[in-house]
Length: 145
Length: 284
Image (cartoon, rainbow over all chains, first blue to last red; front, side, top):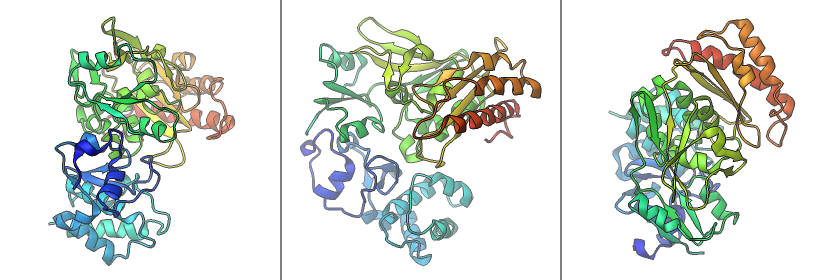
């Protein structure tokens, strides 16, 4: 547990999560908003934790990859990534799962895959070539009621 | 280094927080998507951050045909407005080019203007749309045309103690478009961007060139070649000749001058095509 008052004014949410709360699932990739590895949900919407100041989140709810399975959409996204083996080193995976979860929560499962994939341009993967990730997105959107 | 975070609730409190403090002591924070990078690498070392998030500047609206965009409104909120996309397609196209969707939930027009990145995707469009910046400071609000506001790379006309309250666009320009070229679709910096906009009120085109340092510029001689609301292929060819001769098409680490020249010509031709196409078809 961390008191917001104890967090310096310019501390990033990414650092508060990883170092004060020991929630290491959220990854640091570029620390400049360009790779998406740090993606979390703030009030259910995908945000870049490396560019978010923790102190600006008073009253907001943050969901990290550790909590993704508690969300009905998040759980289906996780299952889809597992089923499609959509990870190699796994470093980008939490960011992708959170980004896809936020996207499907916002746009719904009826949104065509091409549109969803376009919206995921902020998430980079260096290992998979995105093919399995695209399959996981398609599978996840198809699994939504 | 722990920094003070000041979060004023009113414009007066925000201006007061800046008043009398030496330049560089307080950094102004809107979305922070550019500022935070400078804090991390030490390019800026303020003692305090002044967050604008609680100010009533995060809305946009049409007032008698003119669009006013609050400086701290997240780009994603602008992007979600279908009326804005219909009346100012060039702006909608530029918004979609900025970073990624999650980044646009934080990034703001005020921040984009204030940081004056040389290859911003928004500033060339604001030039083509004849936008003005509403600056507030000790002397009260004053409008500054974007063309005057942007001085050079990372340099604006904003004086110490001043803030950007809003940006106004004088009229809807449905015949407008913004096309760009870069390596990645998202989260990349454009090598070249071309914005075109036809004004329904004075029946003239404006052409702006972005992507090349030190700042985006209007290209009036290229614009002058375009006549009427549907320029002929010959008009467009002349406009392309004039644009590609522009000395602003320089080379840098992002692109050679030859590449910029060639691509700028293609983008201008396509942008005019997109601008005059019916709304339902236009998707660059």
